[in-house]
Amino acid sequence: MTTNSASHQQSENYDAVIFDMDGVIVDSEPLWRAAEAQAFQSYGVPITEDMAYQTTGLRIDEVVSYWQQRFTFDTPSQVLQDAIMDRVITQIEQTAKPMAGVLPLMDRLSASGYPLAICSSSPMRLIDAVVQKFRIKDKFQALISAEHLALGKPHPQVYLKGAEALEVVATRCIAIEDSINGVIAAKAARMTTFAVPEPSQAPLVQFAIADAKFSSLVELNQAIEEWLPRLKA
Image 1 (tube, rainbow, N blue to C red):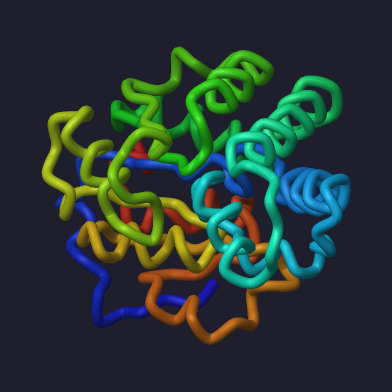
Image 2: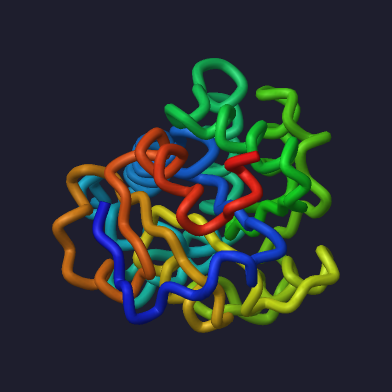
């Protein structure tokens, strides 16, 4: 674990915990990259899975827009969005697994009385598919998608909506993120932000803006008592 001690608030100031979904709750980032590459390639756009790292954390319409600025293609945005989403949801339903350590972490937080929310760039139908597959809907007081917001991550709007839904002040929330875009969004919302990046992305210097960086959710679960003392009870 690495911690930005200068931004470590007093632990009793935290009232809620907000989870990103892809790469935090569900091990779906590889599924997204594969679906993105397959969908674009099927319409003649040479996107690879390695290239898809560039769009991690973006809303699906913003993914298509991102590549429209770099390639010339005539396929309508909605067609590509649907092609990607259909592939991802099928894989979520068939093969997706929760991230290691996330279910015990949710159980501890919920049992200790911390309200929880999901704030995700993914469409609501994917959020619903994940919470139903893992049977965790009852753990969350709010499920927030950036799908219909004016701006997606790295804009903070989805996180501000999450705090509003939980009826807490954003500065009294902890956000858990795996992507740079997500960390930027949570920090812009003035939330204390934990980064749990994929191992291949962990060395990126941009994660230094997070308040703490963990190698896994298992490690986060072991260290979170420093921030949330009620968990010690």
